[in-house]
Length: 308
Image (cartoon, rainbow, N blue to C red; front, top):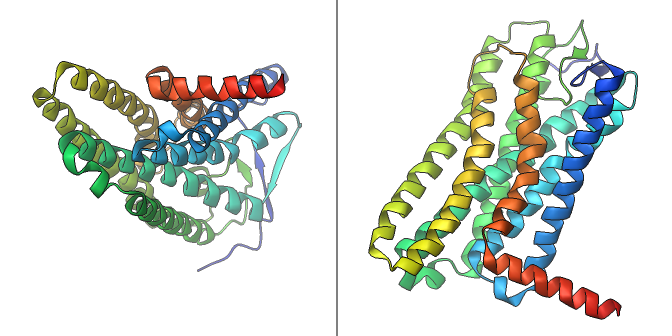
């Protein structure tokens, strides 16, 4: 492995260099990041305190909200601070740490979404054996397994980043550190590294997306044997999950499954899945889920009565 010692820091060019547009970037990121924190932390607090939300689906939703919060935090706060500065410098070590944490929590979200699809499949297709199959011990083991998988995925990203030699330009045409913009700065042939990137991140996104969509097609097909009320409830749950899957995976597939070429729209697409999707997830799950909304109302009522 060839560790770079020539370039000690990078300059993040951000979404724009125009001072007026930087203010717009700050406002947008601040709005979405604040909404992400409030929405996801509210879901986390609600699930932790509500006995009515003890099913495996909400156990996984807890970890989805946690991964969403951490995932957005790896990018949004620094982008806001960098937009306040004339030049946004980031050290080599900080850049590598951001690559690691970004992919750690991004891949964790992917794996949690897969677990949620498995949970819905068992609940709808194997209702009589649901609590036996998806007991708390099994759910805990599944979450621990995907955490290890996310860690391994992120380690691969770090090994790829550390294998790149940097000896010249240090301006990253992006608002956060990731392998694609770093590949453009490497003073070596990056063809093999790009193939490994596609094999790692690209395959993870594409295979996971296909698995999820196939699983939900099977689930929706199986609903024909359920009662009208059961079909309606299961349909609402599956539709909300499918919306989350499409919003998250389509941009990721576009970014990570193509050769080492960049387009002007890449940064805007990255904005969508780094801050918009984590912001929308709580809205999708609460607006389409009566149980979560009722639990939140009870939590708020307890807080209000406790403050009086």
